[in-house]
Structures are given as C-alpha cells and as structure tokens.
Length: 182
Length: 414
Image (tube, rainbow over all chains, first blue to last red; front, side, top):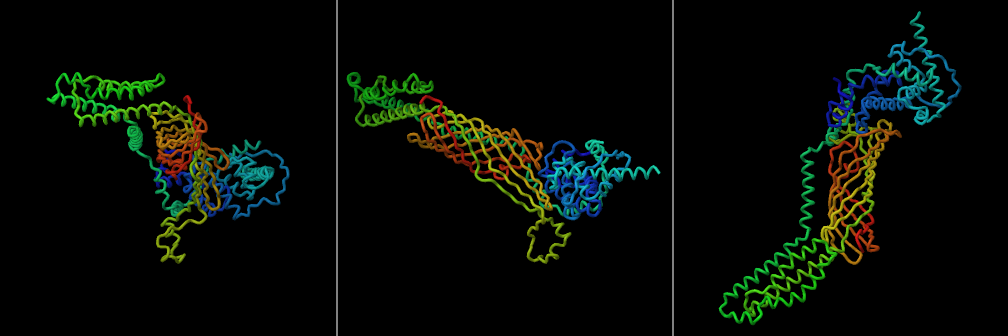
C-alpha cells in the first residue's frame, strides 16, 4: 500500500532523510509532465525540475497539510512558479504590444481523443504568452484576476490570451484528429 | 463549450500525466541539498510523555513548596511558645513546690507568680482579644483567638504555687511580655488580613522585541566536491571547512512579539500572600519568506491561544497606596485557532500543542482610589518546548522578558 501524503510529510518532519527521496520518486515524473507544458525543451525542463525539488525540500517546513492531494498541488504550484520565472528570464515573456481583439467561440474538438502525451506537448508548443496563461488558468486554477496580478497584465488581457490559446489548441487537436481519420 | 467545462475536461485528461526523468536526477538534486537539513529537522523532537509529566510534577511541587514556605505558620509562632511558657510555669511551680522554704499558709496568703501575671494579662491582653473577636472576623480568625485564649486562661488559673524567688520572677515577666507581644502581633496581622480582599485584574502584556532571522542555504560537502569548488575558486587553503552558501537561496522568518490580554482574580491566602488565576488571550503572528532563484514564497501565520495562569503573589512592601510585590507561577496556553495565509490565500493548518510556561515578575501597584489600582509588572517567562512542528516566537525565544500593565479592582469593602 502506497504511503499517504500525510505519512510522507510526517516522516520528513521527523528527520527521515530517505523520505526526501520518496517524495522525489513520488512526484518527479509528474513534475516533469507539468514542466514540459511550460517549457517544452527537455533539458531546460530538467533544470527547472531540479531547482524546483531543491525549493520543495528546503521549504517543506512551510507546507501545511490540507488533506490527501494537497502535497501534489503544492508541488505543482512550485513547479509553476519556477517555470514562469524561467520563462521570464529565458523566453522573453513580455506582454507589451498585446492587441485585445474579440475571439469568436468555436466548437471545441474532443480533447480525450488525443493521447495525453500529445496534448501535453501541444500545450508546450503554444506561443509563450498563451502557454503561461493556459497553464495558470487551467492547471493552477487561478482566476483571470489572479493571473493578471501574477503577470502584471490586465484581466482582459488574460481572458484574451486564454481564448487565443484555447483556439490554437483546438486547431492542433482538430489537425491531429483529421490526420488519424485519413 | 464554456471555459470552465473545457478546463475541466483538459484537467481531467492530463491530471495523472507523467513524463520520464533521467535516472541520475535525484543524485543531482541530493548533491545540492543543504547538508544540515536533516539535523535541523530532527531538532523538532517530541518530548516523551514521562518528561512532560515530570515537568508538570516539578511545577506543582515548586508551587506547593513556595506556598508552604511563604505561608505564615501559626502553630510555630504562637502555640509553641505558649506551650513552652506554660510548661516553664508548671516546671517552676513544681520546683517551687519542692522548695522547703515556703509553708502552705504562705501560699494562701501571698500571691504567686500567676497572680502577678494576672493583672497584666487582664489589662493588656483581654482588650485585644475583645477587639479581635469581632463579629466581622472570619471564622478562622475567631478560631485562632479561641486557640490562644485557653492558654492565657490556663496561665491565669491559680496554681498550687509558692512565691517566686526574685531570680525566678524576672524571667517570668519577660515570658509574659513576649507572650503579649506575639499575641499583639498576631491580632495586628489579622486586622491587616481583614483589609485584603479578592481583587480582579484586567491587563495587557507584551514581550520585548520582534525576532527576525535570515538563513542562507548551505552547500553540502558532496555538492562542493561535485562542483570541484575549492580548485575552481582557488580557496582551498583559506576556506578550511567553512560553510559555503547557495547563491539565490534564502529563508527569512519574522516572529512578532506576543501580545496578551488577561482577566484574573486574586484571592488572599494570608496578609502577604495571595493566589491568582483567570483567563489570558495571547496572539502570535509570524511571517515566513522563502526565496529560491528569485522566486518568493510568502506565508503569514497567526496563532490564537487561550491560557489559564496560576500564580502566587507575595507582598514585599506597602506604603499608603503603593504596593510592591513579587509574583511567580505557571501557565498553560491552548491554541484555539491557527490561521495560515499563503500568497494571500487562506489555508488550513494544524493547531499547536498545549504550551506550558513558568515565570516570575516584580510588580508595583498604585491605588488611585481604595477600590482601584494601576499596576505594572516587568517579568521574565520561560516557555517549554511543546514538541510541535509549529514554528513560533516561543520556539525561537523560550526565555523572554515581558511587561504587563493593568487595572486591579478591589472587590471588598473599602
């Protein structure tokens, strides 16, 4: 039976050094999956995962257990922060010169028809500004207001970027589905 | 499709998605972990139950011991000398009986030593007794007077004695005077005791100074070796094992001083000694900041405690409306609410365990009017490690000075 998150945290707090490794083994591949959605280049993603785990372990004292799944969610938040910081530094993540046009709603293709790995990769291939917003909105569950605060943009800009990201992703999914039907 | 629905489908589809990582990634991470991380964590050890019970027993022992030591012992100061004096009188009487110098006629005709004592006792002691056995006196006071009175009566009762020799008469006079002095003192004490009533105190208290820490994150030896630090930096000869900190990693903690508000009742035990207990609310707040590669994680923690204090107070000096006293005791604080705010979002957190503390203070009280006094108590407190993982002011400064300022309301008649 797998160790619960509570047991894992208690072991770490009791000074069990092996528990750090168990924490890593439990979340490393998940962390890599999350990171690749932000930064698709594998070597860069590995650097981010590595730095994130050092942050996770050195700041584990600030983590407060809020039920099963809260540790996974906390890991994801740290990865997200680390990745956005990396993107700001390395991918010239800038929100200037952003035109806020209205996006027409279209029918969304079935995401479930595309393998997980590919969907993850598709998100990673989105333009940098779309990628950040879609990750923060869809996976970190931040509101557009919170995204605006985090990135220093307007709420409207966040909404627009998300809609564009969604439309772009829908196009990629449609392309894939069409290619599979031929 | 609505935004929320689309998000939900995307999340569900990728919720358990994992991507492979290289086998040596953990080794790379481990090499960069601070070497003292585990040791630091192990500091938060749990105190075994027997140690906590021992500490509680020692605390109760000290409290009881202090009370016993400071409690005025009536039996030793009054009845013992009385008994001794009576025995002395009897002994003298017996010895005198054996003296062949006096006849029975002489005994009847001439007053003996108790008769000499008698006028003194009736004139000096009796008015005190009459005054002391007041209707308003507490039962214990009346009982005390009753305990003393028979001995006086016994001393007054005619004895088959003989006229004392001039050498015997002088010590007996001294004994009598001593007896009267002690009785006088006791009665005066009761009068003072009568003027001490239960008091109610309302106060605010705080510790002295906030605490701020900034810790770097150390490079482990393995990491130093991996980076070939010494040869790269060319400092092998100068570093000599001194710690090397990771750049861009830092931990900051700020612990604000505790603030307390209390309502206590003070019950007199004797003229100088009293005990107090009540309810105390204490608020602790702390801020934690972790910086890793310029990413800042901020958390704010607020802990609310309700405490039960138990103190003894000893009056050292009193002059008109001014009163100087010493107080000592212990307190148990129960964490009733714990709030954690991370990046503006409230999170649940486990409550702290019971926080035990002991302390002492020197207090000065000035009575503005007989019913109301202002007081200030600078003191020192020691907080025992309760073994919890909750990081707060008490963990980092177990011994701290505090100042309590309050109002004391005298509940008795002025």
